[in-house]
Length: 143
Image (cartoon, rainbow, N blue to C red; front, side, top):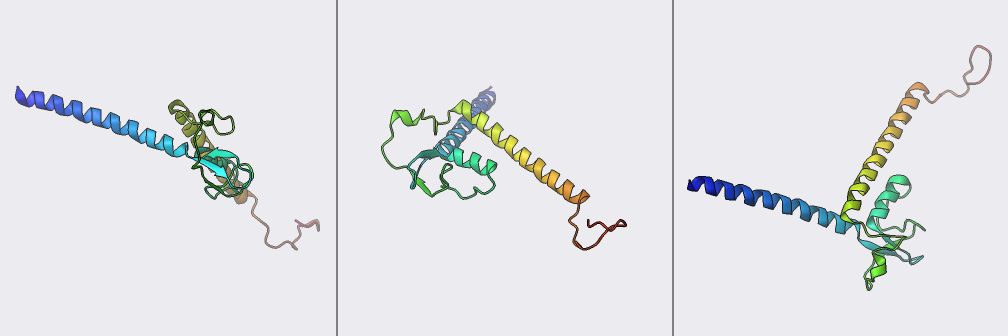
């Protein structure tokens, strides 16, 4: 009887630990994505998740801590936090339910990027770049 009680208690403790670990992991990820930056040039605020989305949309935007608006360096915001910063339309703070939407958006953007690469490879396969530009076909026209 005692071994059964210990097994049940062990299972309850392990499941509680697993649930708490997942919750803490999501909260850490959410806090990381909500990191606030301030542009040194234009002074606008933005969050890390906006940088990640911008890097997926704009292929020239690859450096972290760059303002998504003016593409100038941005520093970590260390000033005083106000309530309006959580709901600022330019950089709203992600909530837990928004995290799922963000992940879906990132996944779709990566899928589209992969499809674009596949399409480029396909087009390159069927329309190879003509290395000999001076060659002509039977009619005498340049290719």
